[in-house]
Image 1 (tube, rainbow over the protein chains, first blue to last red):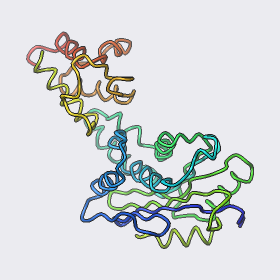
Image 2: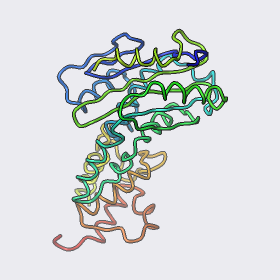
Image 3: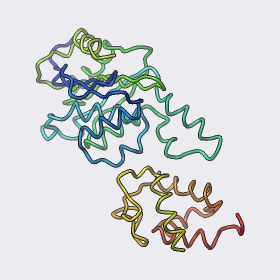
Image 4: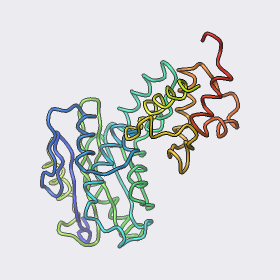
Amino acid sequence: MNDQYYISAHCSISNNIVSYNNEAVFEGTGHDIPGFLLSVYQHLGVKYPKFYKMDNLAKLGWLAAEVLLKDFDKTKYQPTDIGVVLSNAGSSLDADKRYYDSVQDIASPALFVYTLPNIVIGEICIRHHFKGENAFYIFERFNAEFISSYVSVLLETGQLQACICGWVEMTATGYKAVLFLVEKEGATPFTTENINKIYSTANG
Amino acid sequence: MDKLIADLKEQIIEQLNLQDVKPEDIGDDQSLFGDGLGLDSIDALELIVLLQQKYKVKLSNAEDGPKIFRSVRTIAEFIESNKIPNA
């Protein structure tokens, strides 16, 4: 696989632990999923009122991107040069179920807007002003080979200069986010092997 | 009217999940959208749901939306003039 691109940073959120480049930067205790996500948001110390309105999948992806990009100098690139490619197995099923329950009464528009998984990409792009190529793929399990080849093509063809990619999964009982920042410079070659290694060492 | 305005402020905060906002932060005549409270189009739909659920008041003409949802006071006036007696 192409090794001319690099993982310049990576982040994971799972099992109540937030890690940045393999280092735990926050650990929650005894929270349910919404409570844990809120504690991460509060730990980051950012003011972004829309966070409260997001569904759990969007919150998870948004928080992971927030940690992933904390040292990222996006001014190196044009907004259209930075893209986001995410994946998971359950799509937006968590929000879908909540929306289904809400339609017993009057359907909630605020819930409805999260019944697509790619909304998490929209929330990240709005926050960071990214305007590059984006896509959300559904796989039965984490697919490092696809991510590696797809993102490499986007970079090789000049559609992107940098890409945030990875896995953001939210169910009623569990969650896992592993995001990679891929650029033309960095310490870790952007290979299937390295992607899998980072994914598998993420907690949970 | 004052009681209705006070109730609306609390209900708007709860319905729209405005966790950083307190009722006293919302002026009676403050613009709810744009540079005011910063609500968006999805919030407008949630406000319509709020009026239906809490006050049994329906917005029959979407073009009236911007005028009705201009401020908490204009929403209260709309409820007062459209509520069903004893509903």
